Amino acid sequence: MASTTPVPAPRRARRHDPDRRDRVIEAALAVIAEKGVAGVSHREVARVADVPLGSTTYHFASLDELLAEAFTRHADSIARVFEERMREAPDRDAAIESVVRHVSADLLGAGPDIVLSVELYVAAARTPALRAVTQAWMRRSRQALERHFDPTTARELDALIEGLVLHSALSTDPMTAEQIRAALRRFLR
Image 1 (cartoon, rainbow, N blue to C red):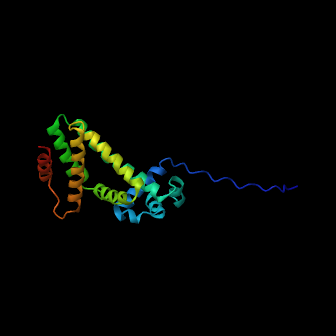
Image 2: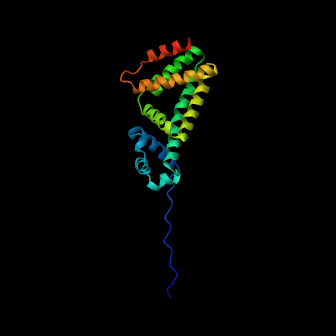
Image 3: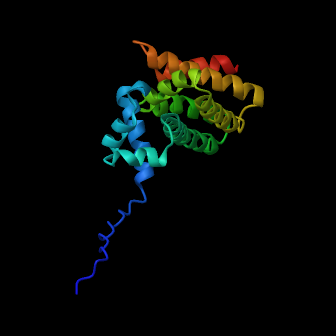
C-alpha cells in the first residue's frame, strides 16, 4: 500500500561562500569609483559582486549601511599605508618626505582612491554616519602625524594634506610632488 504522507522535497544545499560579504563591499567600492555614490544600488552592487540580489540586503540592512562599510574599508586601507609611512620615518625631515609621497603617490596616484575619497567627502557632508567615517580617518591621520609633530601642528597639517589632495584632484593643473613639498616646508617653518 502506498504511503499518503508527502515526501518532502530534498533541501537545497546552502552555498558556502564565506567571502561573499567582502565581495559585496569591494563591489560597492568599484561601483562608487565608476558611477559615484548616486550610482550605488543593491541591484548594481549585486551584479558587480556576482551574487544574488538578496545577498546585499542580507548582509546590509540599507544602502547607507553598505556605504558606511565600504567607505570605512577605503579609509582604513589608506590610513594603514599612512601610519606605516609615518612609523618608518626616522625623523621630522623624513616624515615630511613621507607626507609628500603619501599625497603625491598614495592619494593622487593612479587608481580609484582619489575618486573614492572625494565621493566620501561629498557624501559625508550630507550623511552623519559617513561623517563618523571621515572623523575616524582624520583621527588616525593626526595620530600618525603626532609621531613627528605636536598635536596642534598635526591637526593643521592634516587639514593642509586634505586641502592639497582636494585641490590637486580637482585641478586641471595638479600640484607636483615638488610643489607639495614646498607647501609643506613653508607651512612647517
